[in-house]
Image: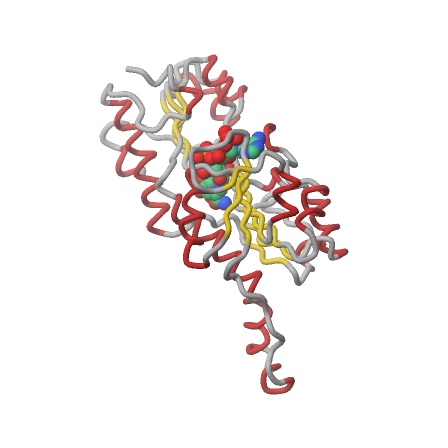
Length: 302
Ligand code: NAP
Ligand code: 8YV
């Protein structure tokens, strides 16, 4: 990415201490390329900033309202990661249903030879899958699940023109679902959307998959539900306080835990990087951003 932007942006800084560096050099900055948080104070410290090009589709870590107020366009990387994140949701679901980690350890620890055949698992075929957030990635998750012949339900704030049943009541959808797959944005609007009531409705035979943001699930309530058996299984790529994962969650055997790798393949990360670069080069060429976040649609007009 650095090589690709070098022609249009000959001076690239990668400060270790961003706050200290910005207090001295912030006025020089026209464009930011980031995987991390950009808050209102950072934006205020860059009075000549034009663009924040964020590496990822979710932008809950960027203060978009402050950016818009300052006339700064925020861009993100939608669509190019849909298939990979959907694969991660499918992989977590399969690992929970077929007890992949338990059975792998069964062979590795010699228990197959000492104890005989492993206990049976559950089939992922013909399950009721409730999608929380049927957007770009949610639709791809539905496509990836198709060979498993599921019944698809979905919950969002708005119904879509699709063939699946829309469930305006999330608790009711959780009650009817075998698997709940969470793929909404993070941020204040979805904080603890998956609460104790939703998880109780999903129930002891239910499986919660979270590939959205850790904040969307009430993590303390989820741990309690998994410990008591009120919730059956959880497959999690994201956590409330990454990279910290509570010891109580790591100790459970009815969970599969991944370190936020939903999009983390060489191929998909290269495509995300290319889209970040395309946004920066397009702006430098005077043709505006390629993939501005919706809140910046007006600013993105050239
Ligand atoms: P998207 O196309 O904008 O879809 C988001 C969906 O969530 C929409 O269907 C939206 O529908 C729904 N939604 C928004 N707010 C909601 C609320 N309060 N309650 C219920 N539903 C709500 O976004 P996307 O491209 O699919 O990405 C979704 C998210 O996935 C990202 O924002 C990011 O946080 C996460 N993600 C995670 C990884 C990972 O590595 N694990 C990778 C990529 C993305 P309505 O507007 O009708 O409510
Ligand atoms: C990445 C993501 O892990 O796109 C997102 O919203 O969460 C992931 O694809 C992240 O953006 C990399 O910093």
